[in-house]
Image (cartoon, rainbow, N blue to C red; front, side):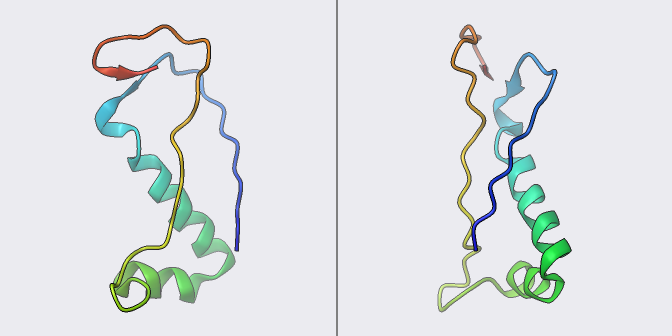
Length: 73
């Protein structure tokens, strides 16, 4: 299953500690809407012999944003 989501924000920067946190929550929310039993099982027990959460996602890309120390721009 693949889900592609495009998100728009008015934020000018994203603090480093917050960069990946929202992505995982969004993935679980989308999975819970489409397959609630699977979402619960993966969240509570992981997937496969290593019990990992099989989600890959990338941080947002801002190709023209200026670099700012301590923030992902």
